[in-house]
Structure formats: structure tokens, C-alpha cells
Length: 175
Image (tube, rainbow, N blue to C red; front, side):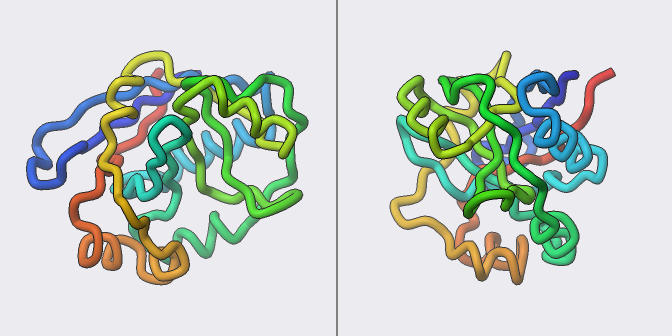
């Protein structure tokens, strides 16, 4: 199953979008893959800011434009999948705050050294197959946004406090 992410790298030029193509592998992490596809079907990631970018490590998103959607999806945790595939460059995993605490935040691994996450229970469910260079071009912030405020306010917080963040214009399942 493939998903296309239309990315706005520079919000001062919202008409210029780039694309990332992701291949979802339910055999790697069936629960995580199912949740990711459900989030895509719900348009959850549309307009979502890519708020945590750590060069050489990860790029993370999953706090939606509408805070009510975070309450619905982000607070609705799923159980863990066993780690079957390593967190290598271009793979995607769910962020978590502990056992069985995956909700809606996902990240792309920037480097093979992210394999260190395997022992911590981060189970990859997808891989970027086109546009990895786009992912490496996301806006990096020296001091990241306050996630609690972002969860409460959604894009109102991001656009007021961090208007320069790259974002997902649209995320869609490809036929």
C-alpha cells in the first residue's frame, strides 16, 4: 500500500509543493500500519506541521491542525507491535511515550544509526521510497515547539509561534 505526502517545505511559498512516496508494510507492524492508514483515511495529517526535525536522526509530525482530532486519535492509544524490521534510514515508526502508548505521531528515520531505537520498541511500519531528499529538507528549529500547547491549540499555535515550519499539505492513499 502506498501513500503520497504533499509537502510544503517553505510556508512563505505554499503553492510550491514537493512529494514523498511512502510504502506501508503491514507485515512489519500490522497494528501500526493499520493505524497509519486509518489516520490517512481520516485526513488527519492534512495541514499537519513537521515540528521536530533532528538532523541525522528523525523528522516527526502527528499533531493535527484541529485539536479535537488529537483528542480523538492521539489520545486513543494502540498496543505495540513487535520490532520485526530495523529503524534504518527512510523507515517510519510511531513515536511513543512508553509501552502501548502509540497514538498519532510518526517519524522518519534519517540514518541507519536509528537502529538504536529497535531495542526501545519502536516498530517500523513503512518506508519512504521516493522523496527522501524532501524529508531531509524539512525546516529545522533550534528550539522546538511546545507539544502540549500544540496539542491543545493545533495549527493556531503553530502558525502563530512557528509559521516557518514545513508541513504536510495533504496525505492520500494511492490506488
